[in-house]
Image 1 (tube, rainbow over the protein chains, first blue to last red):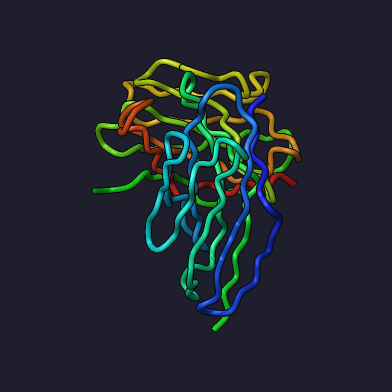
Image 2: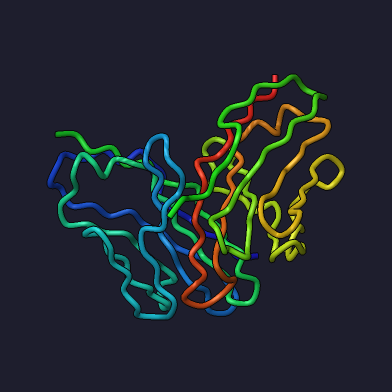
Length: 112
Length: 116
């Protein structure tokens, strides 16, 4: 069945460092792809999304490009802040069922 | 706009006891989801409602879990009897629609269940 694989955490960075969190997927058909973020003590929030190949989702300085050829949707940010410390989840949604399938999450810790 | 509300935020019970969680979605959202998030894993969909009808409950352990959405608004998820492996965070989410640009799911803060 459909699945999402994320790099394991925690990812520990200094403020202003470059961030990459890898995400690859397996799916039949053409899913939509998402990154969700969970800040400490809060619920999951949609960070960005892409609905077709070569689409780039972006929000709050984060970007991810839907790469069909490599079945990837890596999350990047050029300069992280302490406030970006959170758990990041990659997810896909099958167009027919709308069911969200999540990866296991990657914890990001940013130190000043 | 008020977000998705869930209660209680925390619950500790002994195995074989029963427990219920409540969710109030964002006003006007037709679709409601319950997810189970075990520590160290991503959320897993348990059940999806469209208004007050069930769309997908394929991963709901129906021998012990039940859910209802009366009047197509708020919803309750029940576990009876609970097992140790049910310890998890139970997330409720809602969305305006099930596809297209209105698909975004909005999540509540979750209920953390500990079964001892």
